[in-house]
Length: 301
Image (cartoon, rainbow, N blue to C red; front, top):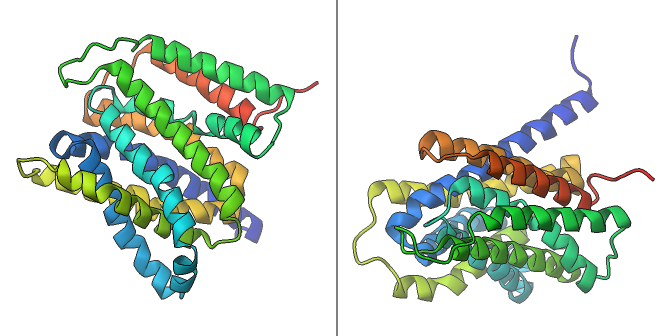
């Protein structure tokens, strides 16, 4: 008995959903490997540069080069806040905190997005969404309290600053999402994706050259940064936009909640990172709060 069209469509978006979560979960692992040799800013710059080189030919092959040129200022600006700054912040944070912890903090992006949309786009949240914001921030506070020291560790970076860097990156993601909704609506997603990576590259290239490591990065670091550029940024964007088309934006947004599961698994298996019960408890609180604040989970009357 063969599956019907609706069953095949459901299976396709579910496969894309899990594959995207697995890929984005690995981005923390690859960044952690690369940043040790490259440093935060060069890691971010090489990542977006590789992603731009991967996506730009796709734009040209589809005849969208003119659209990109016409909107380059707005798209480049989004790239700084949606890729350049956040990627550098997470690379900095991964010098002193685990990949699992950084991925859990990254799961707050939809929550910050709801706050920015509330104040910027006047998207007033319902009572259950406000409750979700409170729960989500409580989870962040619980998680951050465990890392609330600003004394440098063996890496030379204080865990407290690393946590703040992750949260600042999440705010940048939220700002770029609202800006894109207001100023980039109607643009082909591939144009936005490629243009944002080019813009991030332009913004990071000079500081990356200035801070380029004196010692040549090893082969493992180059492989890691290539993987995070092509797989976790270039291919992941294509999957993400296809997921929006086949499953809708709400389901695509929910991938953020599954990413930490893969990131924690990769960190434990490949880096020997310790996963504590407190971290898992905070993750559950943050994810529940984020699901409420974005409207993916609603409380009955």
